[in-house]
Length: 235
Image (cartoon, rainbow, N blue to C red; front, side):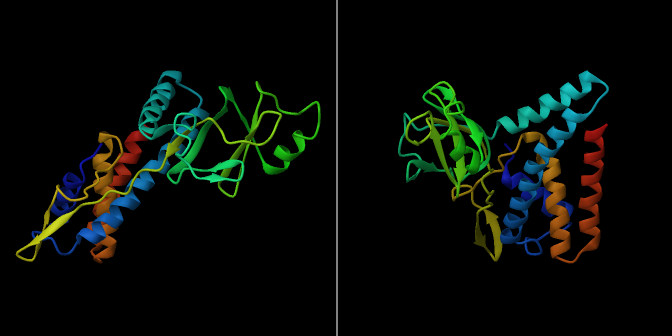
């Protein structure tokens, strides 16, 4: 986890601003959320690309393991057996979690479900040869509602395992002598990314901040440092 105040102070220092004003807390929080989301989504692109690379198996495995480790921070398991009211009931199914980014696993009564599109989910239940069973259940998502079937009536899943979206970071403050001062006792939210992403966060926010305050040198500095880090990751 990366401390939001550490990143904020470094962004201000690199922007060569002695007073908190050019990069306001409101702007910082907006840019921080955008930067975190960009890094988070890049994990899955990089993971997909790493698994396509042929050559040095050790290097590919190391990259794959590193990215898997970084994404595991966001894995979440939800048991609707232990907590049936964790999700809103809609018809015979359950509304998907609001923080869902990517669904990894769906099970019904200890059996993993095959996730089907709506047409196939409807059709396979009608044919004796393809009809789902208790050991081979199926699932479908329609209008953000997930429903399962094991040969009888449609029902809600038992367990969902998914990648959650990172919560938006929030740098909270109080105004003292017309300056915004960090207030850790308020509703501060740190970045949820791995600690190794602190430099990348600073560079991305610096680039976005430079564009906002119309300081091209600040934006270019952040963009240049960000590009160097990305090149190093690909070596």
